[in-house]
Image (tube, rainbow, N blue to C red):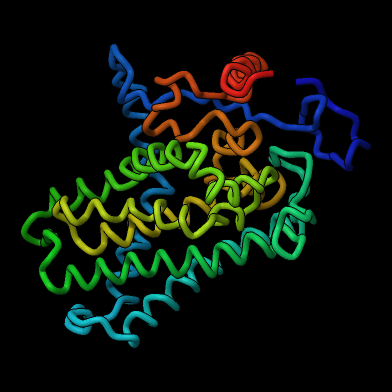
Length: 336
């Protein structure tokens, strides 16, 4: 990449950007080595370590703490009642709003690290395509009013089903290995489900009635992750329904729903790294791979945990060569 002028759009970060002001991280985008033949044990071991630590381990811990200390007693949930459902709703909304707000205020409102490790040269802004002509307000509305409500609706029905013995149940004391296996596989299941749900949403009918709301966001921020039409939220949270057929524990179900919620917020953060202080940074959990989908639409429908895009020829790694392949595919799909 050629380094652009420091004066252009105020991009004073000393990072090489292309002629349009976009920055590409040096990290190689490669498919999950578990699915590569012949197998490479060292690559698989590295992937497993990075898969567990630290992000997915945090999801496991948060789901466990949520169930143990922030969830009504199972006996109360044998019947639907406004009391315990409201408790779950408030708990979910507080977690959703807190995570998105902290990230948005630091990175987007206060611009605490400026353009450092920011992929796009622009910021969320005003446009008539958004509710109230404001991208942030629009995104907050869809995230809180629709996502938080529908997520809670799925969880409430699932908790009621667990409490009444309708869903196959795993007791972690009696089946600790199976409990841990399911816990570890939840994020991979989410990658599997997300790809196919997302591909369905790009069918013309579903795109026009629902998915276009999410794709109004080309420049993405933390609130953009869950900015979806309610129809899309209904499809998005069906990832939780697998627990009706696969023996599990409420912790697994909660982790599934929390992963869908929190990964969307983190994944749309817009910054590759968080700068803690000079010389100290940590990975943000944001997905550069998915940001390219928002920029180009017809690529990167999933993530590389389940590398369907790689297999089906729709993967884009941000390189000029991948961009040309993607543009050629779009010309085939849509004409000139």
